[in-house]
Amino acid sequence: MALEEVKNIINDIARGSIAPVYFLMGEEPYYIDGICSYLENNLLTEEEKGFNQVVLYGKDVTIEDIISQSKRYPMMAERQVVIVREAQDLSRTIEDLISYVKDPQPSTVLVLCYKYKKLDARKKLTKEIKANGVLFESKKLYDNQVPDWIRRVLAGKGYTITPKAAQMLTEFLGNDLGKVNNELEKLQLIVEKGAQITPQLIEENIGISKDYNNFELQNAIGERNQLKAYGIVQYFANNPKNHPMVVTVSLLYNFFSKLLIYHSLSDKSLAAKALGVNPYFVKDYQEAARNYSMKKVSSIVGAIRNTDVKGKGVGASNISQGDLMKELLVEIFN
Image (cartoon, rainbow, N blue to C red; front, side, top):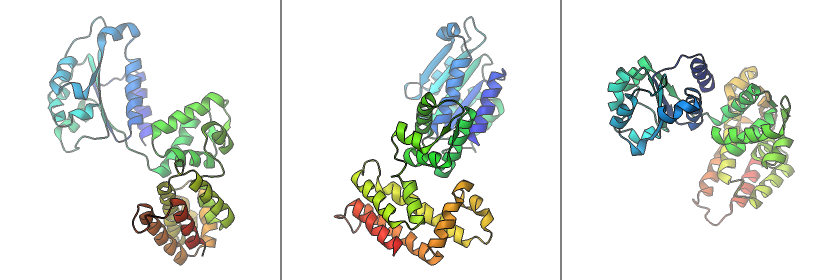
């Protein structure tokens, strides 16, 4: 898990085990920024930074510039720190760094932030970085992994959160960990340490409705609560910017796809693992399975696909997204 790997890297640095090269790469910038920030703030004193900490940008430098800077000796300090932001702009020539990585300057800590890309594992540079430095890949979390990430981050700071509240944040913010963390930090400013973060707190302080959201729509459909489902869809139709149909359709597709899996399980005690959900939410699939047969669920999945196509303007260019969602509810409930 990336969070554990990040903790290990930071713990090593805190203990004084500092590598000469940190190559931070991958699709999720949150962890890359976190490790880079820790190195930037903790390796040198404020007095030492003036002469011995340099920040470069990939679009403005060459690999030769980076190597030249890295081979300098520190001035009146034990080490110098060279940080290369947006290093992915050097992707065409990044392999040229191998000559330095093979024999890095012991008094230099070179940090490369290679966001949204990663090195080819088969190339020599990757192997040399692993041998002489730290190679860290920051992978995007899947949406279903984000609620657990939220819970663990908050637990580390002395807070708890209800499963529904974590799900609301995930639905509203997606898997952009930077955005999620910003909202968590806002909540921590107003919630006492040791307190539990609830849907009510999120509604009051972040502006996500605890009653009119995709999570509640999914529950209403699963329970066959038609009045509540139509009410939520109407609310979405009145607030299309905050509730784009493409997100709602995607979440409903995931829900009913997992419901198919739930129906097919011979041992329902394995549902949480098979569905990739928090055990707290298994009851939602149990309820929905009682209300929708496997055959009906297959039909609903097809209807959701058709709605998705229509929502993109194929064969239904004059129908509003609100009306498309109401049509989908008719197919689900009939």
